[in-house]
Image (tube, rainbow, N blue to C red; front, side):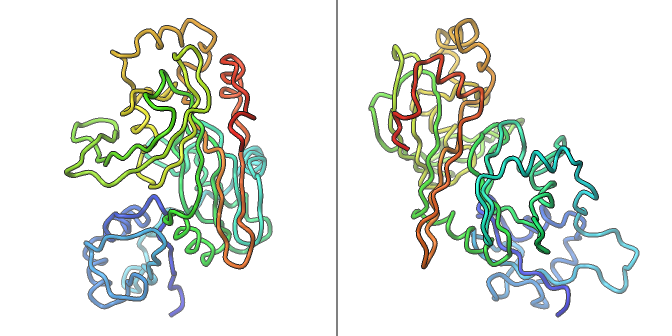
Length: 334
């Protein structure tokens, strides 16, 4: 059928209900119309019929039929149109972020402070500027995972629908090696280990925040090692997440008593008052309110080809912090 789309589920969309997936991607689609499309089998997941409450998994493909009916030609487009024009400045910024590209994917070095997707108060974001990365292709690049707004580092977008589905499954797999660098307050009790603490969204109203919850939370596992430390007040951690939960690394660092520098959402102010003072009054004053979490490297396994290793240089505020603390990037061995 003309107009039918096969849309891959991205890593950050995993485990949400199918109806909420449609609400997120196609906000103007009425629930009653979606139910009719489901009843008639026009919407499918991996080729099978689905219900509104079907839980999606990263890498699955949703069949999306044409969403505008002949009876409602005057209805506004069901999905917000991509920005009509990207400024030359923003296009140059996006292209300047490119670390690597081939026929399947483009790897970016996302700067801190730039959101991946839009929101109520987010006018500029990577998803809205992906047309700047078409590089002559007819297809628009697609998101397959995301980083928090204030996290920097390696981020991958797919250049085709087929590549998007494959990459989404790869991100779900534990075979993909992801390494993050974090500067934290304090020092873990052990120089290396594994943090296994299920996470669930806080029941408290207000800002989104994840909390340790073995009953209602989803499994979250992070391996870590201390690369270096200074006077036990600040440490450089290498973090290797096995799962990809929202705010996983930030919440896990807080849970072992070493919150990430500059992360105002996951702090332990009572236990780290002296470090907070040191941050604001000492050498690190300039980065006291800038999160020091960086997606350093990513290794993607590709059937029939050598693994692809992607590495992103540190952003300026973290380079400055490394210098102030006497840390050398060569210590990590990556």
